[in-house]
Length: 157
Image 1 (tube, rainbow, N blue to C red):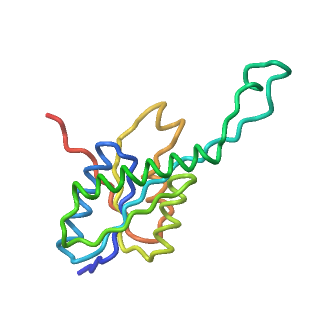
Image 2 (cartoon, one colour):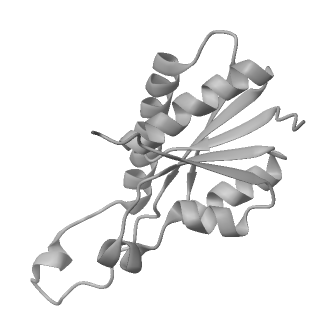
């Protein structure tokens, strides 16, 4: 029998990610394990050089570092609210917010924390959208060194 104790649930705050967190918390409660809940913020691109003298872009001041900090702060607050709403009192949880490519950051954290099981929502994107962006869940499944559970939303029949 597999004895999972350390769970990592990655969330993008979608409905399928919420369902994945619910499943993770139930499993952790049954296994008397602990859960790390992670959200990865995409890096904010640094604006290029201004269009030119008097150009619109050149006249706008944008503090990329401050904006990135605000994104991280907002993500942490959303995670705290979500975990507070869903987690049972007897399940130990930790919140982690990072910056970077989502799949790579999920796998990196799983290795660093010696995670037994990664749980991630499966959006089920198909066609052009999947071709353009790829699937974070698919990338995690292909590159993780531990077990990965993808949780789809139940059929809406």
